[in-house]
Length: 176
Image 1: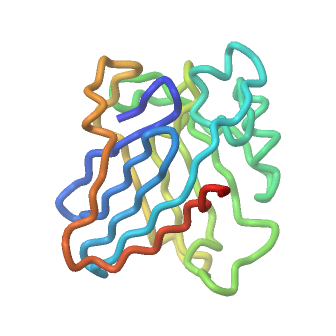
Image 2: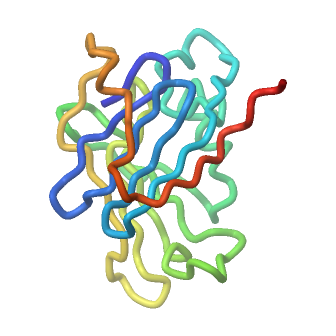
């Protein structure tokens, strides 16, 4: 789910049971397989233009595809390689290539990546990352359905860790 205020509570598939909830003030991440959860403060970023209101990249200030592509220059030669319908939305297919700086701690992300970006909102609808050594897919994510700015109950954006879960609260402490 995607909220106008850039907060979300994604619906997880059976094979991806982790939960992420963001109410615009606090981001919670719960990993049941590891029996842990963590929270951190979120600060709304200032809007660059009115067009960024629906942008999926507020942290980058991307109000257009050009703005987004300027931000992905950390990968070699990003380029638009096609267009396709994804989750009922018209999307650009963007080949991001390989990272300019390779990751030693997560080498599986060093391969080329393709993303499908909603033409209207610039929300990422699909990602595919391939192995650096072969064409094998090592990671993928695909949005199967999306509704922008639906009326949502605030209770969807609250989270209480289950009893017995190790919690790392990384939120700032209030100033006395």
